[in-house]
Amino acid sequence: AQDYCLTWTRVKGEVKEAAGGVNFLFKQWTTQEFVFVPAIVYDGNRFDVKDIKYPPYWYDKSEWRLDMPTTMTDQPSLGKEGGGKIELNTGNASTPLMAFHSPAKQLGWMVLTGQGSQFGNHGFSIEEDRRRAEVLFSITAPAVREKRVGGTGFPLSRDKAPDWKAGDTLVLNFRVYAFKSPAVKDLLRRFSEVRTDLNPAERREVLPFSEMWKLLHRICQQDRWDESLNMYCLSKPGSTALWNSIWQLGWCGGGQYTLPLMMQGDDDTRQRVLKNIDVIFSKTQTPSGLFYAIGNGIDFGSFGFHEVFNYNETFVRSQGDWLYMAQRQFQEIESKGGTVPQAWMSGLRKQADAFVRLWDKYGQ
Image (cartoon, rainbow, N blue to C red; front, side, top):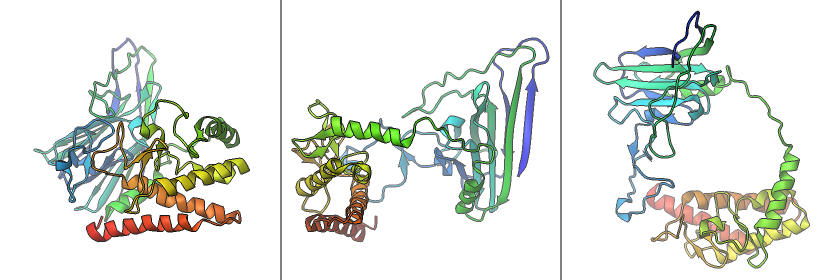
């Protein structure tokens, strides 16, 4: 690894909207290079794109396919055919780093920097020139993007470089790594080793976990338990919330957050958790073995957002959440000397068998 420190100082006079930066130009570039920015760019995001608002879902049944390629919403991408440009700021990445793996050269390259300067977050840019077979990686201080990454799409960034006066100084530190990388996993392994080198983690002891537990426990008992349903809800009982904001099987729903309540709650809380689990098994399991994943405590549906899906679809994620978290809660019951009802055990086995049937039939 090689460390660099670039410094800009305005000696005299003033200048409007100026930023510093550094470029890294690579030649003999192809679309086979695996471009990586942690948490936001993988393989250059050279995937199929579906321009759709959140939550992304294929409501049109004619678009469903078993051989679905990796598909994303409209996000930063170098393009499947290359020649694209990605503009980010360091806040888009889990670590302020850009990298690539070259399968032909079996080479890995990374540049790691800090989060930003007194002017704000640094900017990242990756731009391919397909005609010249080149790519340009850039760090700017601060970020000055034309457009920013939105939830979906790219609104204007409103980034603005700072105005400088005499005596103003900007320092940009970064570290460059070049190493053998026979496979993508070697790039990712090296990243995991160095990701905190310039950005060590700092503890922020703002609120003790014990106090946070008291707050959340009180909310769950006072504002999320519905005695008439024997269920924990996602909203206050009696509210006019939609089904997916009343009860969900997975995600942050009633089959999930009961585990800490069972582990840390008092006897009354544990009894409520057991009642909640019993309702899930007695009211929401379908003949297939899978479970309904949303409901209002009386009626339930496969899944949905603003309303139940039209074709009885459900999410693998919601089902998998429950398959795992139910077992964790079973373990907790047994660790306290309790016995898991046979109906619960057989019900969960039925769900697991449904997953096996799906895999045996479709291979996914």
